[in-house]
Length: 532
Ligand code: 4UU
Image 1 (tube, rainbow, N blue to C red):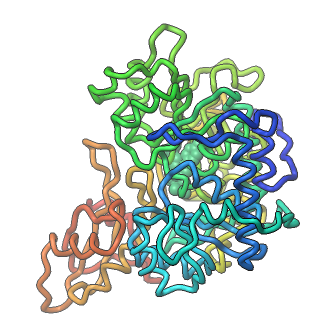
Image 2 (tube, protein in one colour; image 1 turned 90 degrees about the vertical axis):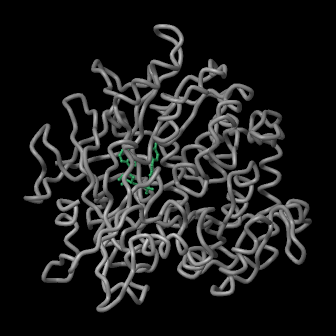
């Protein structure tokens, strides 16, 4: 049984992502659109439109055509949105790469996506060039400039003619982020212009961003949460997005204070600091009205503690809420509404540990994994989602697509949820392989492939084990030694950490005689979880 959203459907503008997003600031060209949180430098909405036009023209002049993939390996700066929307306006597809990836991980994404151009920054250039040697990339653009490479300045001062690419929002891709989904290795998630436009429009009744809103963007734009919720949502309603290149608590708090930030969209580790760290009291955070957490489960008591601490008066001050999403959902399907943004006739409370309500145009099902049938009211089930934010599929991978997205358009999330009589959802478990570390994806299959690449390791399986103290899930490897091989736990961990980004490190190791597998050869992760 499909459970409808409690909100009436919203209209989804039939526009490309840049057209939709730039419309938001069109009436206030002199207002800031992007602010560098470190220097205070800014780009106005008017300048943003102009720069995007130039980047698109320069890319087209290089011979890039509709559907070509341009990868971006860059931390958050106020220029990242210029690059993304420039690529999108040229009809190309932006594939965002995690800034912390090793050259090998970067190369995997460049090859798999077929990227023709890589845009990066000079501090990452060595890593980028190492990756490019193993991939089909024709050109590396270095935003801040480097000998022998075009820079962003070259692009935005290009005198190439403007381009008007004919974009079909419902079918043409705009971005290709990577996600492991419910199983296996990372895959390119095909998201269309319409997916991203829809998701911003769908959040509107719940998250009522105003023009004078100032949003802190410390979560990375290379993750879909940063791209849609921070960047595009912030810009689309005419507000200002204030960028920080990495999370540093003091810098984060100072930026909220000095830049009069009104909204923060974060992941649980940042909320933990807001609730507990003594430094928080040294800053004036009174401009802040709302903090939304997402990307991993938010502890109810922690959310309450953060809200109590930051709330100045009884009914004023900040509210702490939670959203739920997935790369394959562009990413939002559920979120906590602002005060006053509840659906008509809503009288209940929104418990802090919940992920709020299904956003408009979104249907849900909760499926009992044991029976494959709809769970009884109030019972837990795997969350299925259907709506205009559901991906088109995985790139070049019809098998994985069919396993996740069924014929009726339901995206099987691999997360387990319950819904109460008010339509409030709570995510209670995860049945897929995926491990989340500080909100980042860790795909067990990827670590297993790295592990068995060691000649001393005959077989391996990786699961997430919850650390009670931090609340984080820590990747744990079960390792079968090769006959006669000598290898220690520390050596196993070092072997992995030299090959993967820091968030994917294996954080504990146990040697076992055999990896438990089904008759079909699938790792029985449940058995390993029980053992851990
Ligand atoms: C329990 O993490 C994301 C998207 C996060 C997001 C985006 C917009 C959250 C709120 C918001 O407003 O995407 P992925 O693809 O990196 O990871 C998806 C997985 C989910 O399947 C789920 O297992 O991350 C987990 N997850 C959560 N789990 C995401 N949000 C939550 C949550 N509680 N609130």
